[in-house]
Length: 400
Image 1 (cartoon, rainbow, N blue to C red):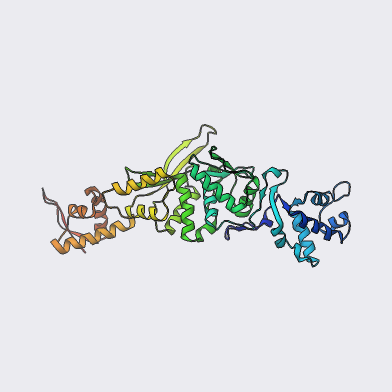
Image 2: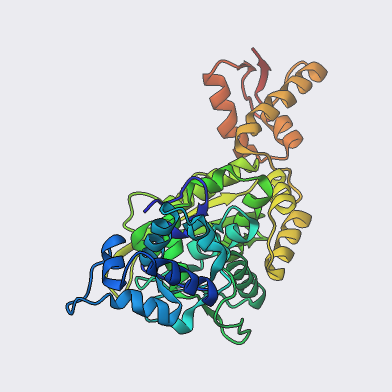
């Protein structure tokens, strides 16, 4: 078994526990060619398939009757026949004749016309993975799920899953806030991409490696789904926050760190993960912590709107309001100092000096904010004080 964290394309033959439903005439051709090499018990030995207690090759007989069988059996038959010169039955050619995939004993949950190999490097693939990592998940029985009250988001995730896997056994139900996908999809996601099963608060999942190397448009689709699920907009603070919880309190969720890296790839400057809350859940008595990253720069809010934005109407409106209401000019944390120095240079050229009030007015910052910046620049010997504060006269400074 090989997990494709890097390529994002899953080979069906790497997924265990699947049952393949073949095109009937193709399956009968396989059996017909096999019979040239002996009876069923003899064939079972050829393909290294153990016999049952009575000495019969029941699995092979069942394969002929049902036109379906365990993935390991189908692979071994195909490999055996192709090595005998019948390339028509090579596993790669078998893929073209797979009509459905399911988990053994769950025929009603068969995915029909599967899109083999499963390519998650597409925009639907990014949407589905992001949805499962945020408002969704994969339970311990390998059943993927997604929950959201927004019908538009649920439909988008459902269509993404169908675009990736094939025709799902049930149609989209607009009245249900909970999506459930076949177990076979969970096996592909877990064994093919390495997505973790179970409660994400305890498993601390991460984003598959291949996502970081996709085109910006696909990364945007991944982040749009993530922020639709977990992002919030504050019109009072003119900011966007993204929050996640994890067991314990020492380290932020791996997923939050990866989300921040993806945002950097698109040119956005979010804060480092900040611990916002510690709490003990009543249901299990286990301590958890909530962590968040925040975007406050006006320039970054604009970039977020242009490159990512929200799909949910309410969040889109709040973002527009945050951008239209803000009067104070915002800068990225790393660019504030550079802008302040440029303003100081302009003021000194014009007046021969500058004060805290003069700089604060030009950069639209408070005097108290200047009390943070000026001591730092004085300590670094990038400015000097030429006259001290006296009564109503402000202290004056020059650049060094």
